[in-house]
Length: 279
Length: 318
Ligand SMILES: Nc1ncnc2c1ncn2[C@@H]1O[C@H](COP(=O)(O)OP(=O)(O)O)[C@@H](O)[C@H]1O
Ligand SMILES: [Mg+2]
Image (cartoon, rainbow over all chains, first blue to last red; front, side):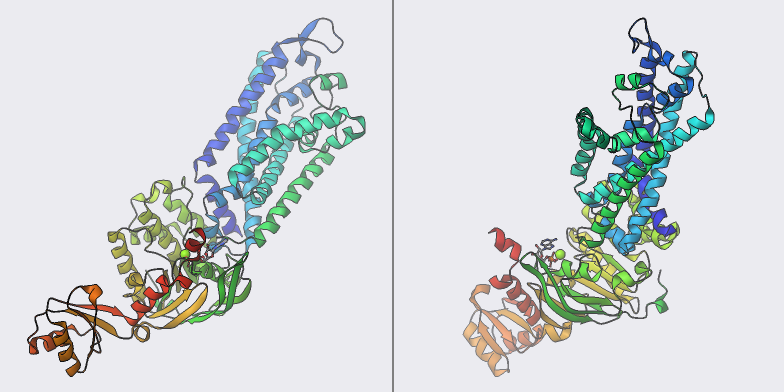
């Protein structure tokens, strides 16, 4: 099994995407956190109660501010993790390397298990690059705005660790999707369109219907935000102003919901991989 | 490169193997044995079902019925398959962005095979220089060589090569033949080479299995199947030479498609000197004298040309 995992890790880090993706994670996290931070710290907006304009960051507790800032690139982060997951299997279909893979490891269930482990490692490496980017720009902005850079270290570290977990779970959803839709380009298109557009929009529409608003909280994107306790410590007016649903799941329930999606998709991938002919 | 004693001679048995794709019976109740320690040509026209058979043997395609065993085991049940069976299949891909060396290292990792073995193989198949370049830039010949190196990684006692000469230039084909002979010479190794061209493998194989439309057509040693070789001779007075050949105990048939005065001679089994001597004794000038075809060649030609055996894919599209 360790041999199979090593093989999968070699696959992941012997193509350009192996190093290009962490770089992209670093840069995009820096960019998104930079934009969100600049807006929150330096752009005056009328407060929820109207009145004198002040940057939104001013009204937030230091912990909430830092948490919101450092996770500002979360959506790109989990999107790229989803892409990594899709590529894990999609690239084998696309480049017909699955033949060689199954010849060297004919017990396919073990290949999927090795992919799960290797993907987790790859996504964590990418997630760390993401965190580095987020901390560099986020920290610099907080410093420039004369705010606490790392208040309540324990709480903040917990949130950042949970962000890595969220990335891993999105990666596993991608792994299953890459098997479900063996055409890699189609899988990427469907995955990104779903995660970036369809699901959030659907969530917003459903959120407007009171009877269904509860359901939307279980959607992957809303569960991801809840898993980071993103709106904890914010008043609901501010959350709604930011386009969020203040009534979110407890972080660990949200994490379990995501785990459920990830497990479901992995099982789909596992079952289909067992059955399919390769040739 | 090989520990000869390690290859104990693993045979292959195929029993009632069948694969249907929709309504197409790509492989149709195939039964045959491949003898250990020999080179077997697995022949058949394009679309005959060779690749599908090999893929079922390797656990990549699930048989509709029947089974295919290697040394009595299913491929998926082999604990370290690369050490038992090596294969280079058609349409095996390489990630274009990964170097050939890394492609092999990925596979090597599954069996704990060291990088030194990878480099040794790259040397052996003659692509050490290209090994660190992206595989996307490889020529067809280099891809075939890399595929072969992958098959040899675990120093297996059984080697399955699917159309190894496909897409190679004449130089590459010559190299591949020599390489196969070199592999075959190592005692005990069982080698299966599939091809849609008899001439490609004729000189290398001991045994032949011929399939068409997914069904077994013939099986035997190459000597058995070769049968007799016809001789073509062309002269000025075909009738006179034919009479002389008949007197010498040979049969001669006029063969106008080979030009004026051409005769196809049977009974000499490819012995050109014997036919030439008869012509000289009869005072007939020899304008052309060559070996024509063997039974096997004739049969294979018929197989590939007769409409019911022709590639079903081509038929479907025409
Ligand atoms: N995955 C598949 N789906 C449908 N038809 C297939 C598939 N694989 C092979 N075939 C068909 O099965 C027949 C045998 O193909 P193949 O085994 O590749 O023949 P060969 O290797 O002898 O040329 C062909 O008609 C081919 O089109
Ligand atoms: Mg073929």
